Image (cartoon, rainbow, N blue to C red):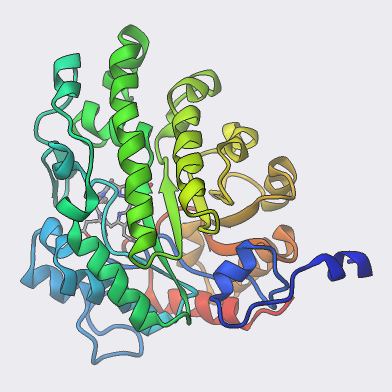
Length: 367
Ligand code: CP3
């Protein structure tokens, strides 16, 4: 690195979490690290090195409904803090779901064990879209704001508290398909035969999710990740019609009120769309593992920060293999503007000691 480029870097702000300093391009000593879906089912009874903590499995036995676990302030706080207490990641993500706002928008859902999300009355007509209400977070999900406020106090800037929302197209895909989908035929039928109906639904999710991000930030979230998990089911042309403009509008709206709030965009399998993702205006693009980190960096441009992109399957490998992959990813990402993470959520059955190893190696790195 040249002397000029070192001088250009802003002085590091030690009172702020490492993750925020890294995203803002400050001169950090290592990449911050957290894992997508770090709270949850891979954490078995007798948590790694913390036998005294109640495990997620124990909580699930006592509170079998996902909605209960994710809509009760005490449980949300406890589950969000479990991985933080055990692994001390640099980001603490709220335990919730992208579908959590739906009942507040008059779209009832549940998450059924073994089946995943179920939308009771899937949307297919203009009349169905008319029934969808704009979301008012303080009225429908006050537990999210309360939990974020408590998390912020508990974590006390030793890590960044992360909020998240679903992107309009991904939320619409659940609501139109009725749940998870393989071929996305229902939403594509709607998109390609009655585009106005889908656009009307996407509009409602756009205003609602912009408000939801603002609400999360006002209550303690220090960065917010937008999950457009299924946008990559769209061809680039269709992404430009059914996802990109709505993401841009969300980012614009939030930046007007919260210009310093980092926004992270994740879309799984986004290799074919990579050059289009920075057009949304987000601060960080989260890469999955099908893109080489060095190539991804080049394709995204130097202004934007990157997150990722270790294959979650790597955590099933040997400790040495895990160490090597971390080093490889960090080297390819280059110094600064990188949040080390997996390329998608941690997989159920991942050995907890390997997760612990991942964090140990990551936190011992120095540029
Ligand atoms: O990262 C975290 O630790 C925070 C928690 C979190 C959950 N869901 C909890 C959850 C986050 C960030 C999400 C986001 C989410 N939810 C996404 C985007 C990320 C991605 O995977 O692409 C999506 C598409 C959903 C929708 C959803 N919720 C699905 C598909 C499922 C079923 C998954 C399965 O394998 O059963 C859920 C349920 C869900 N959300 C679980 C968890 C921990 C599993 C159910 C449980 O633990 O009881």
